[in-house]
Length: 60
Image (tube, rainbow, N blue to C red; front, side):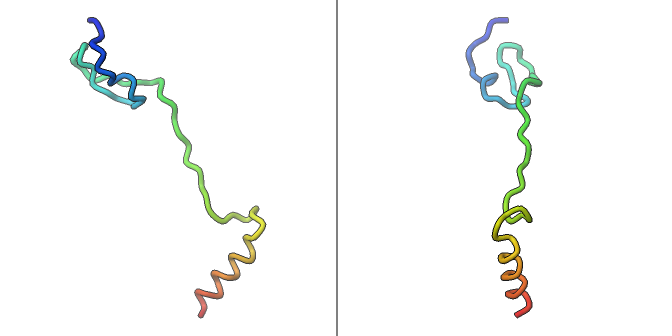
């Protein structure tokens, strides 16, 4: 079973189809990406003024 250089194994996906093996392969070496929350948080300097501005717009 020699590699035929289809480059499917180099796509860095969890599963891919290997033409040399004629089978699907599960790659356990892929890195997992953690979700990061972005946006306004209480630790941000302008959080309170932004929150008050949004609340004022909602009430009006």
